[in-house]
Image 1 (cartoon, rainbow, N blue to C red):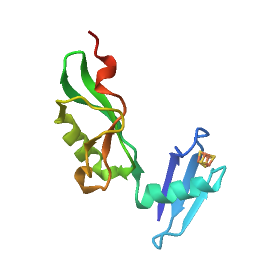
Image 2: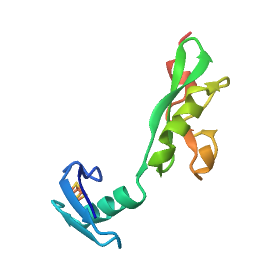
Image 3: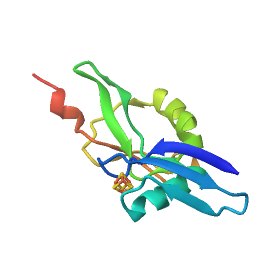
Length: 124
Ligand code: SF4
C-alpha cells in the first residue's frame, strides 16, 4: 500500500493530490478538481516523466549558453543521465530555434531541441 501526497502540475490550479495505491495498483485519488489529476497521480506513481528545460554551452563569446528543452517528456529516472550529457555538450555552429541538438537522448526516443537561435544574442 502506497500513500503519497503531491501537487498536480498539469495546470496552474496546482491541486494537492492525495493518492492511495494498493499492491494491485488500484488507485484512490482525492483533492483533484478534474479527471486529469487522476491520470497525473497514476503516472506519477507508475511511470513519472518530466519535460526538461536547461541550457548547453556554446563556443560563442556573446552567447555562451543556448537554451534547450526536450521535445517530449522523459522518464524521471533519466533526468540526471540526460543532464550529465547536456553538461558536456558544446554548440560549435549556428543553430536555429527548433533544431535538434541531440537526437534520441539516452535512448528515450526524445530529442533535445534549441529554443533560441544562436545568433539572437550575438551583436556586431
Ligand atoms: S487536478 Fe485538474 S484542475 Fe487540478 S491541477 Fe490537475 S489538471 Fe488542474
